[in-house]
Every structure is written in C-alpha cells, then in structure tokens.
Image (spheres, rainbow, N blue to C red):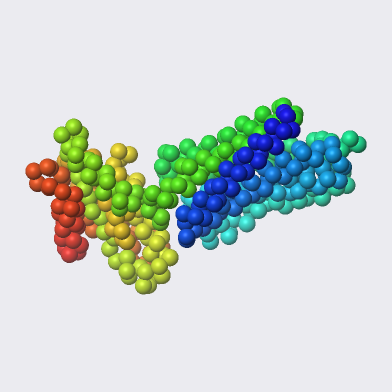
Length: 369
C-alpha cells in the first residue's frame, strides 16, 4: 500500500471527524454525557489516524523517530475502542454510575502498557530494524486479539439488549463491530496494508449519522419522537385517511411524577420517564409511533381503529407497568392515565380537535383514580 495513499486517506478521515466535532459543538450548547463520550471517541480516532500517518511518513527516515511514533501509536490504540464500549454501555443503560463500576473496561490499557514495557527490553510487539523500518513482533497478535475482543464484546452487549434497541440502532452497533473486524483480518493477512483505523473512522462517522444526529430530531431524554414530529405524522395520517383507513390517537400521562421528583430527586424522575417510555415503545407494534409530547405526557399513534384492540394495547401497558413495579426502585411505583380518540374525518376537523378529545379522555381517567 502506497505511503502517500495511507497518509492522504488518514488525513482526509481526520478532517471529516474534526468537522463532526465542530458541528456538534456549534449545534449543541448543552452536551449530554453520551455526546461527550462520542466527541472523545472522534478525538481519539483522529489522534490514532494522525499517529499512523506519522509512523508511515517516518518509516525508514530515522530509528528513534520511527520507534517513538510507533510506541505512541500502540499506547493509545485501545483508547477509541474502550470509549466506544463505554458509549455503547451508556446508550443501553443510561447510567454514568454504572460505568464507574465497570473498572475492568480499562484493562486493555494495562495489558498494552505491560506489553510495551516488555517490548523495550525484548521486541515482542514491534521493532525497528537497521534500516529504520517498522517490523511486526511475534506477540502483535495479542494486541490485535484484545482489540477484536472489545469489538466482539460490544456486539454481545447489543445482542443481549436487542429488545431495548431500534432495529436501525442495533444494525449500526453490529456494523461498528464487524467492519473494523473485517479490516483487521485483512490487515493481518496482507502485510503492508493499513486499513484498520480507516474502518474504525468510517464506523464512527456512521454512528454520528445514525445515532448522534437523532438527538437533534428526537426527544433528548427518551429517544422517542418529539412533539413536532408526532404532530407532523398525525397531520399527514389525517390526509391519508381515504387511502390508509382509520387510526387511533392515545394520550398517556404519568401519575405522581411530581411525588417521585420530590421524594427521590429529579434524577430518579428522569429514570421513571425513561422506564415508562421504554414500556410504551415495547407495548405497541413496529408500525405504530410513540412520542414524548412534553414533560410526563406521551402520545401513541396506533394504526388501528378498533376500540377493542386499542383497549388491549392499554391493558398491555398497564400489565407491563405492574410487572415493573414488582421489583421497582421507585417507592410509589409507576402508573399512567390514558385516553384515546379514534379518528374519523366527520368527527375531527383538525389535529387540535383530535388531541383535545384524547386529552379529555385521559384526564377523565386520571380523575377517576
């Protein structure tokens, strides 16, 4: 592989990742914990791409320059993959405290550090020959195996929590694992080819396009559709009534969220909102839409106008909440009040009429409690 081709590609991908960091900083005044992790993922990948480019540029130019550049490269190599693991764990569990307890995520740093110390006295990972050219060591496979292990572990995490993920999100996570996996195997089989961190960079760009950008169009806390999106969908659905048939709008309001906030704190209140949102999402079909309407209110757009089917969905939601409450950390438990309106053009002339009717039914349910 041409030295100039490697350097050009690494610099190009570094500039793309840098532009992503700049766009995030310009668009988001407040950055969530996961977004900060993603920015660190981009920055560490840029650093590795540049170090890889430097080591290629210095190859054969001077013993110590080449040795130090390669040493720094291997020292920093685990960083992006470990950050990706933390990013995924947080995406699945929404808990920074959980990450603090996952101290063993840091083990790859210790393994590489030990191997590099050994390498100083005995070249087991790499060495620089008398021509100042980089050469692989016999134990390099240990570093590669560790990197691949991290990637495979992220895929396992996604598979174990597949019920919590949208199909598109699950696909992106699996892709992040398999694309670099294929790149690393190709790089091992064909000496002189350097594409592993190019594939990682491409995976990071894909994560931005399919996950991070969703935060700009979805509810920041729950990941559900936001109010503007669901209102646009309802309006479009009303205009398609003749072609697609009837549908139902369900309003959902959490009970006693203020008491949870007052007694347990707003952090626990946010956890309660997230838990309810996941229950709502998992209680409907894939063709149905769930949105956070604001605060502790949610809207469900059901592609069904049969009242009995709608009531069955509501019973399913209540049953899931009851099951959650059997081992709930929330002292007051979780419950919701629901109301629905089946759309017909003759009855509802605007989206405001439809929303108001579902809202009235929901408040009647709440007052009945």
